[in-house]
Length: 433
Image (tube, rainbow, N blue to C red; front, side, top):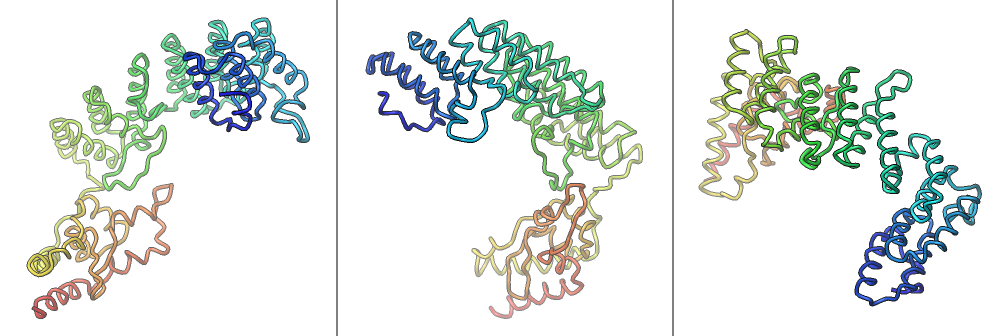
């Protein structure tokens, strides 16, 4: 590692360069002057993380600190000459916060000016560098935590900005367990304002142990207060992202299984909740606590709460459809077993019920999907994609379906002659033997 070796290094590898500098200094393979020269030069790269490099200079080659600090002071005094702006019209960011933080790391006498810049910077800029600011000293860490807390409690225009609050909670978590009271205050205020947190981090299992209980409690509260937002439907068509992945995250924490089951049972037993939501909660209990699932289901039935997503009742078409499929399956098993792979597994009852409601499927085609969720037999046009899976592609954000262009499923779904074609296919197979 020498100054000339790294003059064109990618700044995205700054962490690697710093790690290499530490190793080379430890084993004596490169002299201190060369390491100091490389690190100081790296400060001048437009995309380099200056606080990271400043820490390395302070820790590894403190004798290079005056030269590095002088460069930073020059750029702060003349932003137009800073690495980001050099040779370009205009100036660098007007607060130069990252530069000021790096300078404070190298030159303690500059910390007062750095603090002033941090306090007057707008929320977005300050949040972007709060971790580095907190590493300057314990006092700066306390100030960063105070600002995060104040921003999380703020309500611009009286409106709760949920994402902003959760971002501050996560930032406080990263600062350490002594910030737990502040994080808890933000979460309590969020719920008091009528909002929910969801899963504040994904996966929840990555939340440090000192904060885990509060994070899980917030997720459970969210599920109980707003189950329509967080509960999946039984057909698996809803897609959850980010903080809305409450059920998935809670299911991944077996140590909180009892609390998760209690929350689902409470939703299922809550009369103000819509019947659809109560039944969804009861259904989810089957994978969490079988006994609780049975109790919740029995309670709903006893209370006369109808299940809007209940599987469709058996119909007269089921047996003739199954009879035709048995003939087809038996023929393939005996003559062409590899073709059995062209027949998909059964769709779940709740999936067929959902597809029937949305697509208006005939009883015959519903029975066929219940036997094989997809079929790749192209002869006699007995081909259809995975119907429940295909239907999910047409779901809109508001939960409705736009079936424009859904020609891959709708012709079969409403084909009155489907059973005749299915039976004819079985006849052809048998007569061709």
